[in-house]
Image (tube, rainbow, N blue to C red):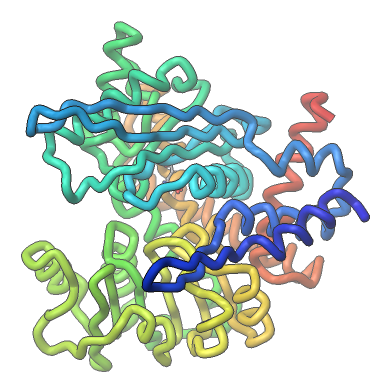
Length: 440
Ligand code: GLU
């Protein structure tokens, strides 16, 4: 049996770990095992040699750091952080940094691998990386967050840089955090280094159009899918799981760009539903005041799980990993799923959705708008010439639509689902680059 087949088989058995707690039993999916399984599947489709596969199946470099931060109460708290640089065959590694209490090195590895495929799929001259710190920003003061962010850079500065590895925002990190990180790196380098991180505030070398880029990019792929499926988005109903940056902008832009109706949204506290349609700005205002979408007047309360199974045309998971599993995939009624979150669907669920004929726009295609505009930001930083927002939108639209159609053609050519097709296109390019560089 070829090595990738064997490893794929092993992960098939081990990717779902059942954790028995004292009073609860929960299924925990290891996201990196899922990534390796997806890659093993791709290796089979492309008939990759074992040496190529063994380079691709693990990260090129990972950095583990401890971060002692002086807290406001005078005590020192030690946080743990990672930066994983997965593969740089196509260029410097690129990817966000997450601040999350449930962060694990395996999640960061998985996300770094997806960044590699994402940059390749979008034809960006970049490799993939990701960072994470185990912390809960919701319980930290601004000063504590600033000290943590600066310390993170102090610990990894040797391994990052505008032509080495370029961080960006991700879950619970934002332009202000990027500004502190850029400033810290610039202090160490003793010169302004705007190009070391992207997703910065506009005044400090940020790009117009970066704020809503992830959602906008996803909606451009939906526009292309609708043409393919003969769906009129003006009459489409949409449910969105997650109402952070990606979820909010997806709701707002789906209404603005296509006139679609948002009927349900949710966040970590639960969900809301109104068959006549919800107003994205009203929800945002309510969430700002009450820290949740739940309780908005004129809406019916639903659970996040119920939201996934609502009868809508388009379902948009826009929060965290592993929310579409073999348990709920059978009940999903949407015709199209746009994965704005990274890794929302498990491999078992993928098979079910494919058999049901649901058109899935996979994560590293659907949410590639963020890193694409980050790349535009890098280009603008290098040339010191800043584009208009319209220019960013039209370049993003071209990139997303090219990527969508390359995946769709591969799906037809190889007779595989859209995720497998996205892997085929992305991994082939990385392999080609590794061969040309003489790595294999
Ligand atoms: N964190 C985003 C992603 O997962 C953006 C990464 C970037 O801009 O480098 O794609």
